[in-house]
Length: 325
Image 1 (cartoon, rainbow, N blue to C red):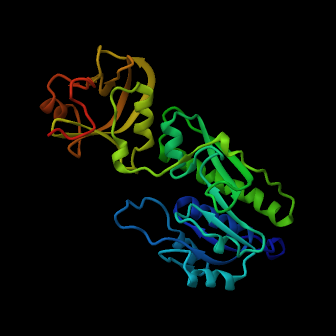
Image 2: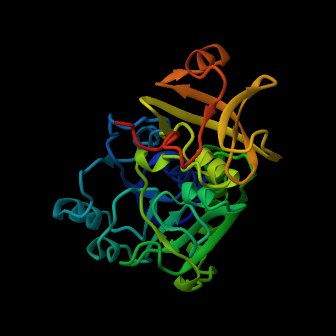
Image 3: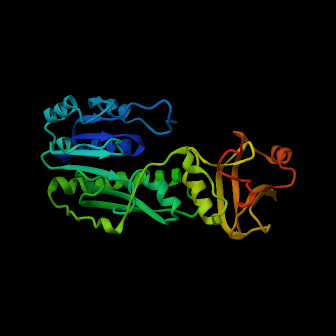
């Protein structure tokens, strides 16, 4: 904790969720911001909760916290107004805030977004960046306006996406980047020495959320594209999958080295201690985690079902993303 003489003189209401919400909230506490209220979500028990708790972080720091179903109802807006905050901060909070809320703080409302805006505005930006084969992403702090992720940029910090990074790997990097960014820029904001830069939205695109069914593998795609899908939705996300007959097959991890395929058409096989998938472009990917019908699969189980290899010829009707009738 900062010493009393070094505390920043500013107040805030914070909307936050997920690990980035925890780390950004902790950064504001460390900076000595007077956080008068935290608004977060109740965990959805149908969702795998693999991340830390904003509510727990707030309570450990003696900060009032509420978990409304909607932040834009009159009683929540009234409570935020009574806090008389200088700032509103949003850190991976999942609901849009209306202008009735955004107009409350004296010095503005600001959001941390998990991309290098204006690229990948919208939902699950890390997953989309990996699916598109990006080699870099990052975090952006921007002023909030009625249009999502479209306000003036305040600060950005980039991180690398390595060839075999999963979305979870990259997200861990973004947590640290977001914390570091706030520790530097928030004092500048309070001192009035920061700069704002309008976004050119024509240089980016808006992306919607993703659902488990979007992890279906299309075996007509090149090896690089398939690898990108696998690592973008690898656990703790729902995973990439396809159906072969009545078998649901999930590829939950892969490794890409741009090695040539062994066979002339797409297939899965075992070689030198590893599973491999030959793809339609003549290259292959190593499969680091494979399940058949939700069971972790080794060579013994694989050979019982597919004695030779699993053919994935996109034109054969096998290796599809839909369950065969």
